[in-house]
Amino acid sequence: YAIALVAVTIIMVGWASLDNTKQAHDLPFHLANIDNIVSNNLKITPIMPNLAYGLGYGIYIFYPVLSHFFYAVIASVLSVFGVKTVSSILVTNVIVSVISILTMYFAVSEITKNKKWAFVSALIYMLFPYRLGTITVRMALAENFISIFIPVVLLSIYYLFNDEKKKFYISFIIGYTGAILSHYVMSVYFTVFVFLILLFNIKKLFENKRILMLLIGAIAVCILVLPNILI
Image (tube, rainbow, N blue to C red; front, top):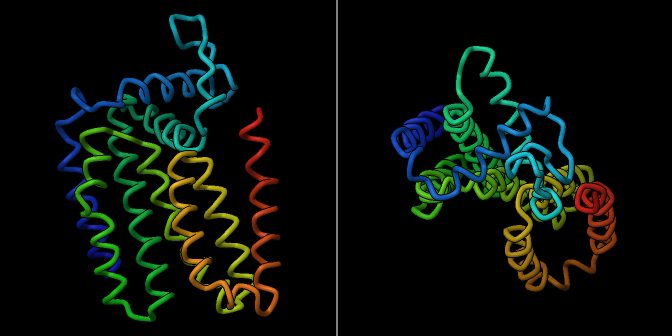
């Protein structure tokens, strides 16, 4: 199932993105920032000095760093082989999409214990029209990147209510830290959904010290995230 998902993702994202670099809405913004990080030897500062015709622009005062940094690392590696940054973005879109589909497959497989349901869920996650439009028409890299972490957070809530402490802490902290550092606004939207899940299970939440587990996880996320937001 996993191999089939990877194949479908590579074909769909690769084919859909192949001839779309000129008209993608957000590409100039992302391309400028990724190029700037690569030219700055993968160093990120709140004000990127090479933007705005050398005047600098405070992009990372307002925008999370993780997606641009990941794309810049791939661009830096591929540049050794003569691959241009714009082409590396298309390659990285495929890589990010494959990782996100596999995280969804693993999450649903863990929750349902059914690989067929996991396969169907991951396939829908990949082929949802808004998702494909985000990748191809808009080239919204951060929205694509956060899709890696959303299934991880959902899985952590499953672990929470099943009292699997170690798995909960690992998945919750990694999932939420990655999500927030990928896209602030989407993280807020997603948190509303997580809050509703917790609200519908409010009685279970206050059993077996689960609320304490949740608070410890949230504090750990804040410790990891706040230094990056307040730079």
